[in-house]
Amino acid sequence: MISTKQKYRVHCKVEPSIPIFSKDWWLDAVCGKDNWDVVVVEKGGQIIASMPYYMVKRRGRHIVTMPKLTQTMGPWLKYPPNQKYANRLSFEKNVMDAIINGLPKFDSFSQNFHYSIVNWLPFYWKGFKQTTRYTYVIDDLSNLEEVEGEFSHAKRKNIKKAEKIINVQFDLSAKDFYENHKLTLAKQGEKIVYTCDHFKNIYTAGYNNKAARTIYAMDAEGNIHAALFVIWDSQSAYDLISTIDPDFRSSGAASLLVKEIIKYVSNFTKKFDFEGSMIENVENSFRQFGTVQKPYFQLTKVNSPFVKIYQDIRSCGGMLRQFVRNKS
Image 1 (cartoon, rainbow, N blue to C red):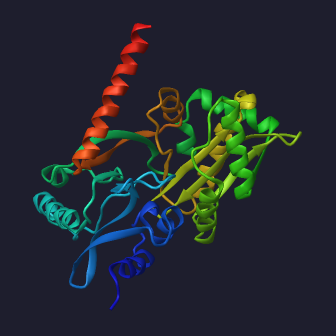
Image 2 (cartoon, rainbow, N blue to C red):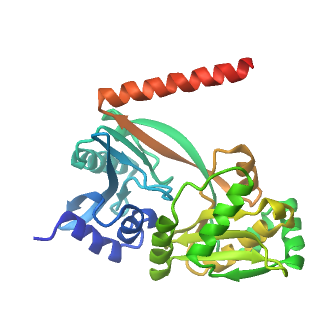
């Protein structure tokens, strides 16, 4: 008998609206083939809703969490055509209840839902909590002249500057991209948060599924000023990883790469998602590309009293450190 996961793999191959972060091949790459599972809701032998999840075991606790380099997961719903609004809400409640009831037992849960999911009320009724986060999206790539016309004056100026001094190239290898990111972070006193093997898995899966490319900016001396690793599905492209060498930050290379990769992915998809940031200066940069702010939800739930105590202690510690900083 075919398993739920096998059904879902077939479903991913025939349903183009499944977001890339919830596709089976992506989950294999970021979680490992045996380390993720999925809840599906069926009607008439067809999958009408699904939600994959990644569960890890830490200190004896079962934790549903987000895999590294994965922006969103959450529910996917196949709405019946021509639904009235009230019927849509009823449909969402029914299938989300079924998804929640289908989840395995866990001690804590944390998932980011795609911004297309605007109704999380059924999860609230089941004891989940929500934090709003933001991403920035160019909603329509069909007219590139209009897209570039929405760039700020500063971005257009940076692009013109970069065009005179750097050369744009594609397909930097996984190892070279990783080492470049590691180097540029080290120059800023930061450490890379994912392994080279993890990135290679994503890179290989993305290229094999014709859903990923690297693009980079190099000067005449062979210095890489900036690089991007971008992925896409039929609905949207995602700026998954950006690297900027602080020694060449003023060259405008990063802005030029955004312009060029948008031009490239517009052949395959409809939108461009900068993947957002809650960091103020990064948000400012994304906003200058004429983007639309999109709220998305991080849903959490803690069932284990031990995890709740641990989180309360960490929260108190964080508030104490903030108090000390404010007083110093």
